[in-house]
Amino acid sequence: MATPENAGIATSLVYNVASLARGTACATVIALALIAPAVRWASNSLGWGDRAMFVATTLLAHETMYLGVHAFSVWAEATLGSCKIARKASQVPAQSLIRRALIKGLVSHALLQPPVLWLVHRYLFAFASRADSLALMAMHLAICQFSECFLFFASHRLLHSRALYPLHKVHHEFKGSVAIAAEYSHPVESLLGNYVPIALAPVLLGVSLEVWLTWLCWRLWATYERHSGFDFSRTFIGRLGLMHGHGARYHDNHHTLNNGNFGSGLDFFDVLCGTRVW
Image (cartoon, rainbow, N blue to C red; front, side, top):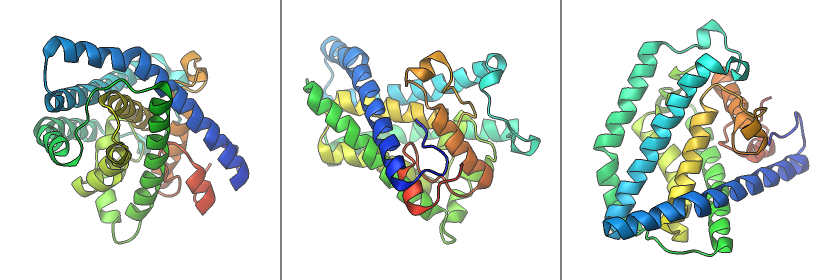
């Protein structure tokens, strides 16, 4: 749900609360209908310990979203031209840049993520499968969304400072973003601007494995779609609240202008700080 152009802080707050509620409702349904049954089935069938389940299911969720949304974007490029956000020729990324981003992402996933996830489970928090109540699951998902939006806005705005922009400049090699570009960044930015905002709230809250996987999939889906260069808000599933088309236009403006629109999903902090660009 997009905040109306030039809206004030109060109006923006109303729209962002509605967007947060929509996201929480959708994510909770996904958790109850898909993620929780799948985790229980895998846990009972495989008999793995909590750490193995956490590492394996997190890797599976990440790769499924990474490759799945990218494949969908390639398909949409050929079949859903009406949803494509208009681009100048100078904003179309070179195939060499796309290949570099894809290879960098897959290598990072294969070599770095398994040991990092093992260490997180060992020393920070042991994400374990458990049957949360509907209210607890919804509350945790809402807090994760709000926390990530605030932390991403703060870290992203900091990365546009003169001192840190040389790190963030790697991500802005994509003048017109595509789904695969979402994770194309300097390692320091990946840690401070991506991993910490996504993982801090789940660790502090002590969420269940089911909530963690739901939140991870929802957040990855959102960031890949917002980088895709497509606005699916007017499609059938977009009208149901299952797509992030308004966020795609919001973030596309950021890549085009290389300034403003520092948030991830909620734009309230941009409106509050005067950095919202329509």
